[in-house]
Image (cartoon, rainbow, N blue to C red; front, side):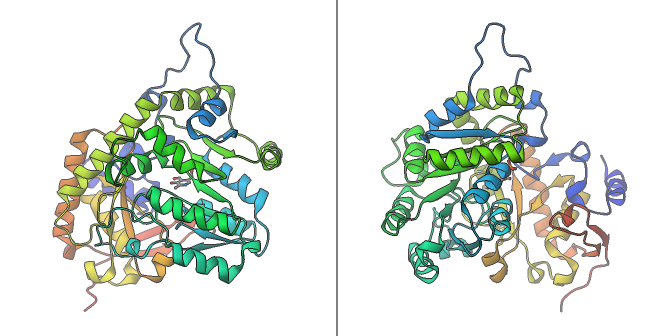
Length: 427
Ligand SMILES: Cc1ncc(COP(=O)(O)O)c(C=O)c1O
């Protein structure tokens, strides 16, 4: 597709890059989710080999992650909806990581308030602290004292934290959080969406874990939690699926009731697909390790740009975009304008990473170039690096976007309509 064809497509989608169909995108780094990939990219044989036994995803998950009660669900967000519905009541507070929007919104819709106690290094994009997914344990204790443990149904931890740039949480930090949680008798639940990336980065970066097998790191990490929700489509070769896993049988049975009420959304085939995706953990580790290396490669080619989030994370490269930096007003949507121009000029799609409340307060606005574990070759990374680098060098040419219709509701951004504007400098 050339520039003129891309402009035509943008006209048809109201200049909303988020909704341009994937077939029009040459280099698509909008998401690392395999949900929009076909089964052939994911490498799944649609009919299992004759005579092969069918496999049970819940049993395999339980064995790999150490939680005794597991239900396979259609998506991670269904697991979040069920868990939040089962344990959050009006007036509850849930301290922990800066969460993915679906996780936080499910908590809020059930009457809870999420309280972000991420480490201060995660708010400094130039800091190359290796564990920016860590929790500030003192801030966590202050939150527990402020809201009182009886109003805190659980602490929610998202290792390899997407909001702050795909950064890992160390086992040392997880142990300190668990100790505090035990002291105040508050359970911990994980959003384990990218727990494999987290474990691989612990193996690479945390003192004393270089020779510890990844399985052991994962199991130790999970041993501090009472349960987890997981979207399986990021770290595992599957286009569908997620899990909810807990240790308490009574809670499990309550969650099973909600699963039946809300709808599991998984056919027998669906269960078979996710079972086969999680059965071969060595393959999973090598796919995720390859992705971490691709991220490093893309990150290192952009190293000399000051707004690159440091250091390289697990599943994507993140860049902070501000009005001052592009020298266009905030009302002209600098981050969207940057992504828009990158697609228009180079056919590359990234996405706006939803900012957490603390990031909004600190004026952090990240764009993300996410790398799926399958479907993106090394060559694509080189081309992506060239395009992003060229645009960052010419950022004073970026034109703003006018929001003509913001769309209603939580998903309004999917219907939003923009209009390209002439460049206006802030000064
Ligand atoms: C960290 C995190 N948690 C939860 C989810 C929701 O998972 P799903 O898309 O499977 O519903 C996502 C999806 O991108 C995610 O990145």
